[in-house]
Length: 255
Image 1 (tube, rainbow, N blue to C red):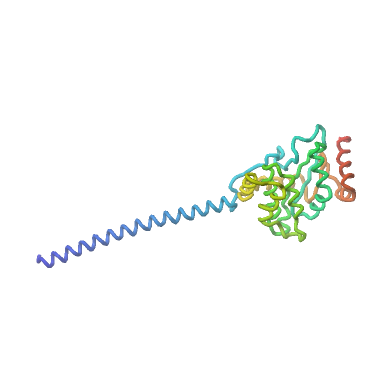
Image 2 (cartoon, rainbow, N blue to C red; image 1 turned 60 degrees about the vertical axis):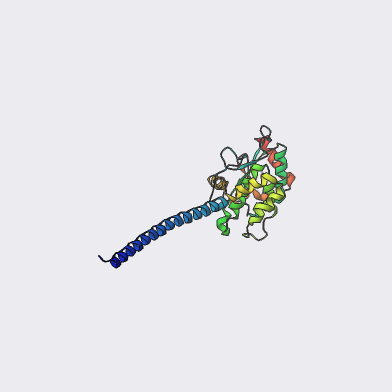
């Protein structure tokens, strides 16, 4: 073989070797890039989960009833034999707001004095009727507020700002910032509340209270029960707050 042919063969072999090295580098680079892309998208997905894209964890409000069907206002205050008052409500219900405006302060005052055991039982059926999810979101937020000891105050703040136009719903700003501020939730308690709301941690609880209300054959809000007996809303609304208070207390005497 001539010298020129040997030199040409040597150059050909070197070129083939370089091509194989380049191919290996490209393959390894593609694998590394694929790993990086999967990691980035995985991090984004987890971030969205933590921001409330799904229920990140399940939480039960500390003052939930034993059967998880509602939340007790001022737990442990009721005297022995005090009437149990259950209010079935939907945070988008205009008549519930009317009830709250007229009788809410009276009920919460009675609960704080131990005259009654007051339980709020949240329903969310108006989401279907109004084609939004504000009943559920407001219920989640209210349940989250219980951990800060401000459940009743947050409940009041929701109804105080219920939109005049039914179906408008509540904004994220209201539920995360405005209502907790009105209820006096601040500092670390506010951060914990917002994390609870963002992760929808109490969603399963609220869905459970709605299901429990349906099982109790409650089909409208507000529904008012005293010691398991449903009151006539027409008679309740025709009277004063004091008349309502006396009606409840008379149940204790008759019960």
